[in-house]
Length: 112
Length: 114
Image (cartoon, rainbow over all chains, first blue to last red):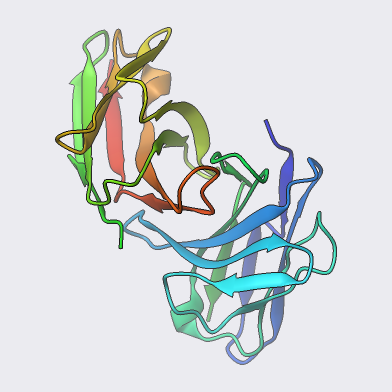
């Protein structure tokens, strides 16, 4: 089982602020993912990475951006937060050559 | 692209009874099907998974069945307990072996009534 961490767990912020959600894992997984989970529960893939310096957009269009400078770290940034960004953000990771994804505890973001 | 449909969206059963959640998928190339359990305030946790070369897999009170011809798979929980109350998600892989992505179902909120 992967050890994957997300900070902060909860964030309440005003419109227009720049925010970065942190995700890190200690298992050396090359593959990492960001999902947005809406109040109706469904998970939508917004970004993923196959390894350092690799990032791809997911199936759901998002105004956020990501970077992958180190294997263990996959931060997500919103340059200017809006109320429509209010959601639960889940980070996951997995090893190359395997299918399984392991999830972090999530960050619940509220933009006022 | 892959589409995963999950039913029911909510399920309430008496403690000790069985619960069944069903999913269908559209891409015949999908070959990995995990199930996740998400408790309140936590991220999804993998509880069981199955590959396309296997028809059934069991782990204590949890079992998953796969019908590749019909493109559907199901989660079975027997002897349900209050701690089984949670949201459950099915998923299907896309991209072949060691797939890069999973497509998730809409989720089922399971409530176990004591």
